[in-house]
Amino acid sequence: MKNKILIVGGSGFIGTNILKKINKNKYQSFATTFKNKKFYKVKNVKYYRGNLKNINFCKKITKKIDTVIMCAAVSSGAMVMQQNPMFHVDDNVLMNLNILKASSENKVKKFVFISSNTVYPISTKAMNENNVNYSLFDKYFNVGWMKIFSEKICQMYQNKMKILIIRPGNIYGPHDKFDPVKSKVVPSLIRKFEKKNKIEIWGDGKDIKDFIYVEDFVQIILKLLNLPFNFLTLNVASGKSISLKKIINFMMKIYKKNKKDIRYNLNKPTMLPIRKINVDKVKKLIKYKLNFTLEKGILKTIDWYKQNYIKNEKYR
Image 1 (cartoon, one colour):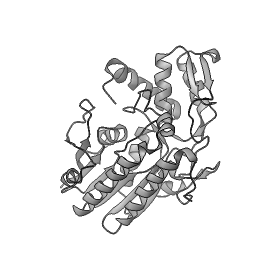
Image 2 (tube, rainbow, N blue to C red):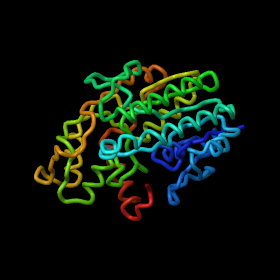
Image 3 (spheres, rainbow, N blue to C red):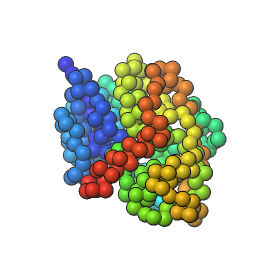
Image 4 (tube, one colour):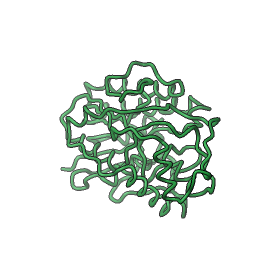
């Protein structure tokens, strides 16, 4: 009998990519969607439309499910995070509480929570899973504490289900958000380079981040599901530190731009200048191989954007 897996937030960025890679011979796939009338529907997946803030909906979708991956989240780019810090808090906390409670009551065996690297303190060192000290970057205070609180709630349920908490690097790739308000670093840059002759960069471009292509991220998550764990917290990232300027320079070559076409705006919202992530722990547990370099991943993302987003802008 196939393992029944539910991807909560299955019409979103991470959820869609997970559903595309799930082994259909091993899993029977289910997914949720909220209000997206038009989204990429993966074949052989049963979708439930509803609101995760409704506990009854959460109880309905988790019945007879073996594994739940919680991908659903209210997310945004730097501007929203700075101007409306509570944007990430209320709905996310309620959704996380509801899906955990429902999963426990319906005797779900494995629960995977996609957390965030915002839980880590300001540091120039590569953060490992034990580095959470509840001292957060000021602009991450609300979203960071929301994720920490949600992780703690997950821990409270460890006697009911096997719990896996994932703290990702900066994930990018197909099916991401490319709109001007909600998009993050890579999709935001792609959108600007595609649509504008003059490119405005928020900040000085010296930010250092850890970027991981979504297909690599998903393959690692699916490998981790096979591990024997009770309660486990893992970083999943590239383990490499990349400056934003390196990405900008690469995209300048692709789009044949020169330095005169780039303007750095120091008055625009920016986030944590350095975030490095240590992946030693996960590398000891599975064969940890990334198939996409940053350049290869960006090229594939640009190609997807041109093929899908520009033509009809139906993916949100």
